[in-house]
Image (cartoon, rainbow, N blue to C red):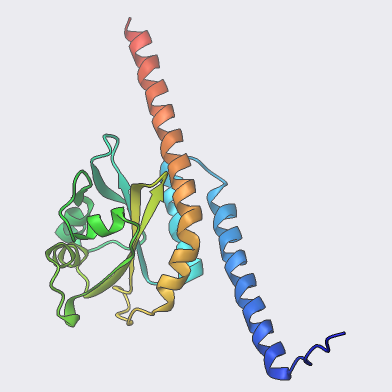
Length: 209
């Protein structure tokens, strides 16, 4: 019979820490699923998604971009922080083409499932990231794509514009954990919104006839 090595205090401590991390991850995923499962109304869903992200990541600003009905661009969906006057109008008019995006652009990276950091003070040389930093009126951001069935259906951009706090590397960790649940919920909300709108259009046509 082979004798098993005794478990050391350090091993127990390491295993306990790993277990605590796993519990925190599962708790975050469950919280997102519960919060986003309460409504399929599109605007309400986006608001709940923002709250869920803030509760999990603890960043200042969350901006959600969503795919348009023609599935050719990502456009402004919702945000928890309003910029002054024309700056907000400019942000709400944001459009990022998703059909055959330029190689190496931020949309190209999102389309292949990559998270993207943008930092104006770090010698940023990507034209698309510089352009987005200008529209966001911020010096730095973290972004993550929302994908369903291997297609880009949205993106989440977070920063600390209001407070000016530096971005934390843990933002990427938590956003990557919850983005899968968020993307699934976004796709369900989009399909529900599209169905309701098409039904309303059909009812109007019947009324006219």
